[in-house]
Image (cartoon, rainbow, N blue to C red; front, top):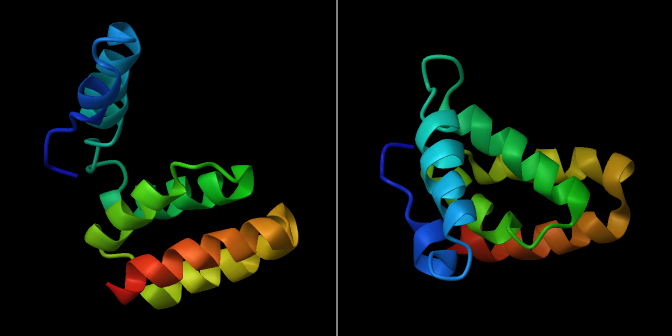
Length: 105
């Protein structure tokens, strides 16, 4: 993930400036950039899996990032199928709805 993340500042910069700073500079600037320790592709798989288990709204954005980072449709389908039995069927259905839309683009 080489591009500079600005979503925190763009969306919450005026409302919650410290949170926006931590999002952009620490989470994405320091943690996601540690590609010598773990690839952005693998981080995307882990992040999507975590968000699926939570039913989190950020899944859509991270599925797009995962696709950009080289996660294939087949891989994300396998992740969602696997997690359906651990995270719950409704969460899997929701994740599949988003993944189908994103990977059809």
